[in-house]
View (cartoon, one colour):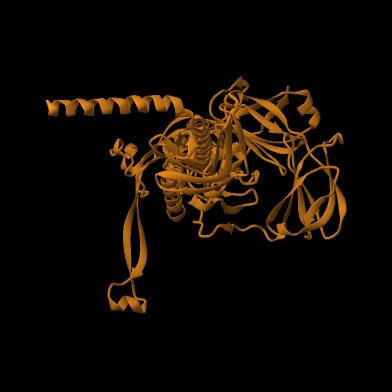
Length: 613
């Protein structure tokens, strides 16, 4: 019985303690403190910490989307020579290039260091923390004051640690809390993504893998070097070539993947597009036709790329075949946006891809390297007033440049103020304006002065081609050749041309289907070569012969009409007309190489009838 009474006493004591604790909590709960903060103030501080965490997360998002920047570098515009500014507009958001070529042709880098990123995030937090809203707490009678904040940020591989020193005073009734130090750790892969981005960028600068892929795409989708077995010219319209090349660049850039990422695991069958970048994250490469780009090709006649045939000219009948060799040189410039993804986080930065003369740019070893910036253009100390007019002496706004000793300097636009020129003797002031023919003016800039330049207006004219008086809508090449500018169109794909007043030689080459077959030929060619062994060192030679085999060839398109005409086009004809009718004469369809060559002789004697309507 004594043991039972002892057990009952213990249960009674426990019950009393529980009841006492419960009553005490409700009676004194407003004065209980958690981590030194009164309980009824804790919710305010929790809201403050949530606001601080949100500011940190927003700052991280901005940094990752803007190539490591919150505050963007000063804007630098591009130029007609280099289309890049120092920022890529991606879905309305400016993203600073890590590598680009400035408008004055200087390679530049703008890669923020990790300490610079931490510094910008610190400044962002210090600015944003004062915008936290406590309106609902003010309505409940809280008084909240914040003093000057000072943030310290450490970016790690898997988190961002923020220590904020700021006196935060919270009061309500008799409760007061003063908190000076606030620490938040936000889970984020910012540091890891940034390190991978640096690794990818350094790989690009070392190997130029983006430029090498660009050259592969160029040679696959555009005519670069080659030979066509043809007795008629091989032609390409440059704008069509550029359009197809751009589509290929967009698709092939998107196909690039990093070895080790989940994307590459799904695309192992196409190893050409898998790049070993030394990172474990998924990497995407993006390009868009809507982004700034530049595509140039030489030689061209206006917008037409022409491979002229060899073997059909008079005197070359001995060849027994025709061929059209070509070699085109391209300058290609476009941006690529590189995105590194880990889970939901994406860090992105753009770089400029530059191919010059069918070759990749030189790798960049320093923070900025000058690419042949003309010495002449650096010192502009001669003031010249440049006025530009049309043929009716109406003022025209034009872009002015100066060419001297093989160097071209951009000067600016015509305006009411004088322009600054570098000093040079017998250089040319060049005026360019949309809708006008470029005009050059010989001028020495050793002394100040003024220049008046007249620009000839361009008029778009439709071409109506006739053969022996009948409408003709098959293959032809039409050229308007003058000292000022020459225009060539591929008819009927192109049926309009821009012309100005002046003397032209108009040429029309008409090509028709042909069944001319050139049989294969075998010829022997002999040459002297050094004799084998030591006696060859002393200049002793022997004759060796070998066979040259030319395969048979079907000439599917042959010169079958055309002619030439010298014609002075008056501006009044261009103003009062919108159609140029060209009537040309036919030639017999050739059935042998000799007849084909004879057509070229007859062509020189054919004239054209040119009528403006």
